[in-house]
Length: 412
Image 1 (cartoon, one colour):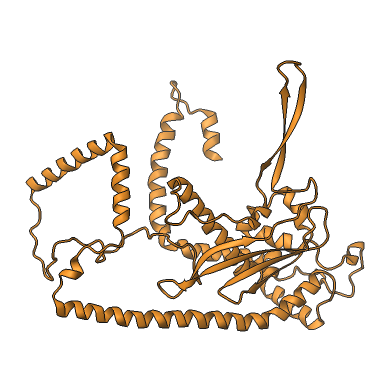
Image 2: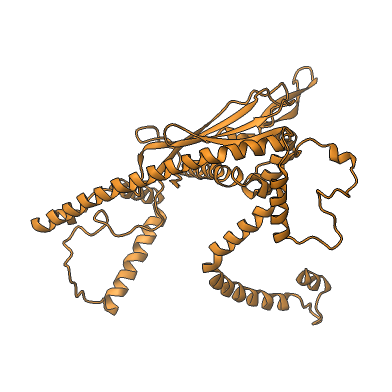
């Protein structure tokens, strides 16, 4: 696993020597609890400060910038400890360095293990591609294994003939080569990818004959999309490569750095990442009109191969905070899409094609949300009760009779 986005701060800041008070903190404290008077004084101070900040937004921005520059700096607490204690702290730091080295070694061995088994998976992927594209047929043993698995999960209706039954009469569709639109269907069943695929994209993705990946010599991987000749672009393959930083993260994980995609050689007028807008222009002198056409960016799956660039590094001109935040979100989404293709789509393409993988995705989502269900349900119940009360009040007109339209809305 890899840390998706570098420089992303956690939502909750844990107490550290960097954010502890500058005053010496005793090991055992019996601090007096504040009384009523002190609480009221604090409230007044907060109100006064809030009033000042509300009237001076620039002051708030300046303070936030100042606080951001203090992150990572020592508060002086560690330096104030007695010398023997500081030596013990340094010793623990040394032990932690040994732990970090072992974590890095562990992640490296995990990567090598992944590469080892990927080499064993590759012949299966090649056989899959051959069957999908009509260059080979599965063996009877493979077909039987697939039928047995299908029987276990979805029993046949009594009297229904098997797809491989010799009694089945051949039809015109039996002459189809391979499995048409295999990868397009699999991708449309994968939620994150389906949201990116437009109707215009489907015409091009029907020519997708294989999706595979390969590891780089250094930490990273490359996704390879292979296409049959088509009327949209001349590329036979379009690749996207994900790179990691040279240094490992805090837990020894590889840290995602950036991605690079191939340039798509679009044929004239076939670029799916832009749309043409036509606009009328009138000449002020001659009063004649003309049609001006302009290409503007539009949503498309093929934007996946033009990944966003990381925000400006330190020392470069600062970007707007909102813009930088948007870029980081798009970087995280872009990385997650690559991971989904690498870890989900490619290894289990047939399950996505048949839709069986969706059941596992829903199960994972349910398990991930279990810890929040009870609290959310309680909140929903409270809200629904309040909402029902409001509806009962609003659904009655002056005569005291409920309105028919409101009743219909409640039923829907």
